[in-house]
Image (cartoon, rainbow, N blue to C red; front, side, top):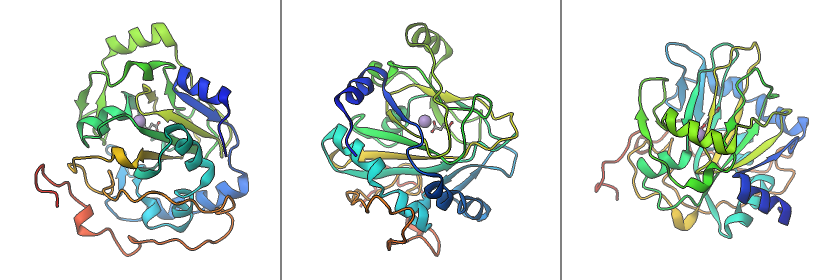
Length: 283
Ligand code: SIN
Ligand code: MN
């Protein structure tokens, strides 16, 4: 799949592209059938909502689940990002966010590059987020909100919020958000399961708690250009990957045909990936 000149110009202006119904219901069912099984597992990759049992985020399913291992190599997702950066990519992070009915908590205003820079020492914002909706997303179930054009500001000042939710985040002050929204406004792309969003690492985004009776499960892949790999391993390997091998895509029908994939963490996460490595101690 190739992005058009118009799409490239839109991405440059807004910092994101939205592709409604990019994957078919049959393809998405292969993924959604697997999610309850993943969320039920007792493994460190499942981060629960604060004080609740609902899963907020499941990390690195592509290392132990066949359908998600195939998604991680899907050309409809990987090729446009390769085109934009003109370089091969590796998987920096892979997560399935629950945002479960009634329980799904807030994601405060942030840029992902804030975390990649401050925690992982990623040299430049040459990494892209791709979100794929596994449920329909509407105005009630906590859609992702963007401030269009905010990616042009580069990495903004951020504070480390370790208490609002169960997951620490480098967040942006309300004063800065007010200024950015005065200029760019707020948009919240909504659409059926199977829709895809590509968004720039510096695009400021957030989502509200899910007070509706509908889950809003979505997969997020952070694809980093190989030469821009992270330099610090402070976070566990299952959250910020340390394997910079370029992604080789499978054929376009890989979600509905059983192409073989490696599942190196099927029998558990290697001990070396469970913890951060202090600066200066990485091999
Ligand atoms: C994120 O910003 O990484 C996730 C936001 C969301 O799932 O709403
Ligand atoms: Mn984010």
